[in-house]
Length: 126
Image (cartoon, rainbow, N blue to C red; front, top):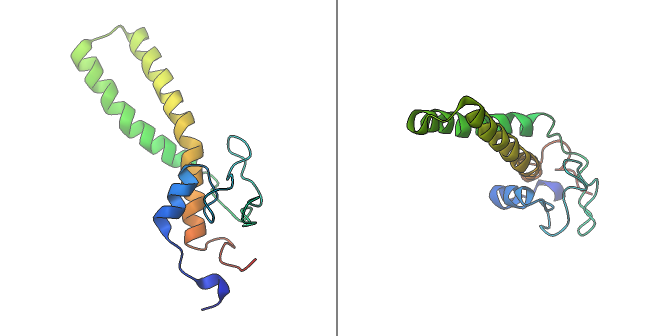
């Protein structure tokens, strides 16, 4: 095993990424904006530009929001029978709010996963 081959804990790295922190040290910021990743952690100097989250966080966000909101939509319609415009407004706002909340967190968790599994250049020393 080389210097960059030491095992890394998966769940702590993903948890730190979920919180928007560097997956390596847990104290530096992972994002410099809403979805823009900091190229290098200012605390531990871990290079983060290797990440390749691409469309993964968006797909996961759609999957989670869809699986949460679709049953809620059906249940609320069956139980309360609100007006269609009211139902649409409530669920549109709910879907947008939940998507905006989940997207950067899922991106951080995905970057933490890549770091822990030494994917896309995270395994190289330096």
